[in-house]
Image (cartoon, rainbow over all chains, first blue to last red; front, side, top):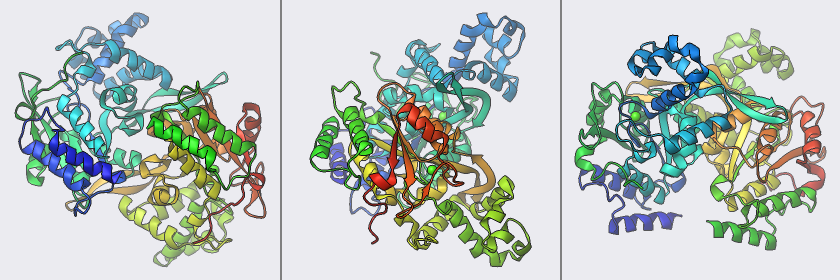
Length: 320
Length: 320
Ligand SMILES: [Ca+2]
Ligand SMILES: [Ca+2]
């Protein structure tokens, strides 16, 4: 395995492992980190099993505008379910949602969000929910790009995930999004299996349906994997501090702090959305993916900041 | 990887992969399951990434008498900490514990257990707790055998874990024991890395100690990974239903039900403690590791039951 790791790095120097990345500081920093942590006899060498790295999802591996894709999923479900719920016409947050007024719906705060979660994410078995997600992700289209959501993943990040795994890194997702919303498709799209996905969750209950056991999804928040929750989720699911972490917003600040505070070689990276033409440009004042404190901290701590407009040759993979 | 899997099974037929297991139904059933799930073109073939198997720990991978080893760990800590807590002399459950009366201490039920957990498992960082566990496991000795606890793991089960991993199975622990009590040593002892360990947990809190972030352990139960909790913990941490599950008590009943209710080839196994001479003999009436309902269910569902006395040539690995 060690030999494989070294030869992969060697070949990385011959064949560009990150072809969609322009030459520059960000690309250099990534490659330098991989080389020094995988080269035996390097003072920064990390044994393969301990090469734990964590990636935020929304805004880091795939797009998140004009709103989180999981919220668009919930909206689509509310529309599908509306005929069975005539009372929603006069009941918030559903009345606003059905009129297309998301802002109005979310004005109800946490209570509104929990009502939407309860109506769309709970009350079915985990197997049934996975099937609902799979069906949606296979056919739903983004309101602006009209692409499948799985075609709005970032090609440069797909190359980075693959480069890291070729060098025996274990690539985990650590996202504020729902853990069971991601797991049905992350393996196919990112090469990341279910057990490498950490996210927010609702509670489940083990029940017998006749002779058949099922896990029923309850309308009750279990864990919010965001901000301080990210190091907690990492500790719970992975049990080891990552050596590198990749994010795009203030929700990732604690994950990057926690990761880079460890001993030995460490790497923190933020994707900065700077490309209004090919994607979206937003940071300190955005409601979605606000990047403010973490951008200052990146300066102070020497984390790598990706300038999407400058650093990425392409944003999305070619459509199939 | 597929080729590697098949050749490993082929070699399993030449060289005995389970030398500490006597020939018999249990050994045959294990080997048959591995062959049919790893042989390409077999109707029961399972791709390597999906070969998820789960093992209970106490009484399945290591011994659990005269009481759970984690409780013996807590007892040792209470004794170590007693000089700093003169008030414990007159305060339950500590007063009883310090007199060696564990039964008396546990008479206080959940409240007593939480007090012991709070005193011994909380109030320090996750890093500090891991160091405390490592120090204890490296030197503490079992009250009866006088062996290190890590020498009271079952040699036949070590061979089974290794046989499964050689065939590209992912071997997870799913235990009622504390997740952070196990992770510091499972990789060295069982070859199972921290991210493959699921267990009971207390809550943690992300704090800054000066410039340094830490996860502090709180005196508050987060999750009990036992009985109905096992399928819930599996779903949360692994996100996929196992194809085989190994346990020893009624605490594993739901895990085996959940595992074997899936489609395709499935395997359930219970370790039955029948050897009063080399280990301990206990089942339906034991306070620790009670095996009653699950033993009946094993009959009804065709799960494999290991008779330790008959099926295992040795119990523990040779002492070093
Ligand atoms: Ca994000
Ligand atoms: Ca057990």
